[in-house]
Length: 352
Image (tube, rainbow, N blue to C red; front, top):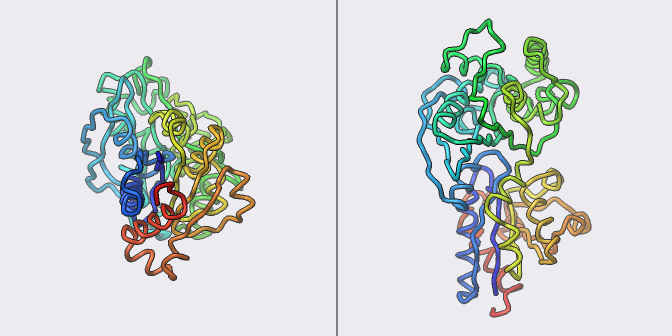
């Protein structure tokens, strides 16, 4: 039996690569003769570069940059066949700072500029920026300002080309929120980063000023992604592409599913957000298109079976249900996932 294992990260506990390893280990403990193909996934947020390196290979170059609060930070750029892949969370990730209102107001996207410069200088034709999991809600303004400094462009010359014109800039995100308004970056994502209502109002005002100064469209689809980092990349000439589809296509998931008997995907919390352009729904749709069954393993499952089935999910398995508590699932995530995957194998493997 051949199984494609394509999970997202289990946020706060396991990377996508670790989750795939745990699922494979658990399955092989029951059915060692089955062929499991590891295809860890990401949708443009944290883990984007690691997942693509695992699937594509290529060369990873280390880049010295700054974090959300200006602290020294080490990022990375993946180079593969003329394309540079950047993970914005390396420079402005929410995991790098405390989650509180004060931090939410001052966290900066400036360090993404260092990653862009490194990518542009590597001789590629295309740069793909994974946008997600950011601590900043600054519309990418500090990133653009730092990029001007790094390339020696005058601050009062908005026409200056900040990236080589021959390089295509793609913004990988499945978030379609605009920069401003009730569904914009500040009111929707600010509270997730710790911003209280007053901080959200101040962030919204700053974003509005930046949008006016830049002359770009703040209501463009996806401009609010990454706390508006996508908007800053649009200012640089970037074009939005689907985050999960970019990852799925890059690693050749369709061909892998075509040769498989079963697909397993998963994430920390399988909820209704998961059905809106996230890894699990993206993988399940690809499995359904190839008429392959798809099983979800997750930390917890908050989606009804009927809704899950409508998105191509045949069965759901929950770590919380299997272990009996959230604490147990969180305290021993790898071991718990190994055990759960063994249970899935007993139910699904033809050789169990």
